[in-house]
Image (cartoon, rainbow, N blue to C red; front, side, top):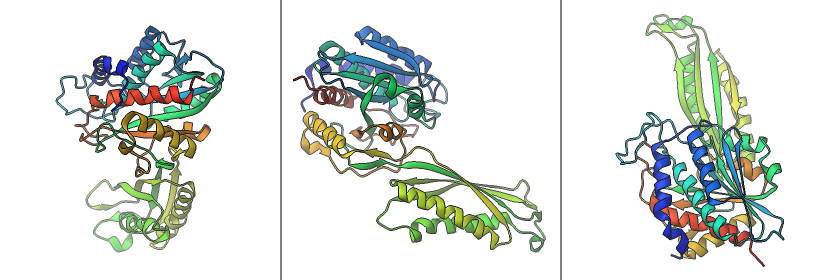
Length: 389
């Protein structure tokens, strides 16, 4: 595997950065220590411009190439935030922040992009500018959109965005990518059913919202199983049902909460509309009423064809063509890098994390053996996208 020699030389150094970040996880926008370390290292590497506080706690470093005849700026993005999970890995470098854990590998993402920053600031073997984007609040806070709203594109004139995420179950040294939707839109719905409460011993005098809710959960599953083309991808999951306060009282209301995951905007629109039709009419058939609030979350993460092919070619150069799956299955998980890809062309790629625990579990850990692979990918992408004539 053609890992860049210079990067291999500081594999241990990058690993030490990663494990330090792992020991001190921070969540959402409260990534003050992490962002501070990132900014300090970028300055120490000789990065030309380091901007802090973009998108509240985001950091952007700008490295100028040897020349700039292209006038082009490429954005490379890593996420910095952790999750509210209590770690159970038993690692020597396990979290010291109770109830917080790097259970998604953002510590590894940040460390690999820092490694690339060190190399690129030393060599500058490219024509143009690289924007190193260290983003807060990917895990539910929409930090990518907040950075965009704070002028990320306009301030640095970014023309393309590239992102990367580790992938458990994919061997270390392998990559996966595809054209089009690679990560799903993440919507939520909130249903409130109102019936007629009363004594549990006299149900005939009530309109039981719990019965309505129980039947409605089954009915909602027909949207995917019977209304949607079987060749389309969608998930509708009910995740919470809430009702009642006493064992001898039939409640007045019941609440249903759930999520919808889609890989296509048209399918997303269809499911939202179908929910709006089914919910009130279904409740009415029981003599109850129901209202639904549908909240759109992260959009579909869509890889543009040219940039996905380019990223796959770079990954093949690093890992070998046989280790790059150009039609990797999409994930129904969500990713707020989607907001950046909605504004500019680009690509999001998976990098193998080996036989590790799944993402978002309390035994997950980023695989440090992936560091030279991912760091080399970032470097080769920058040097190839902005090739010196």
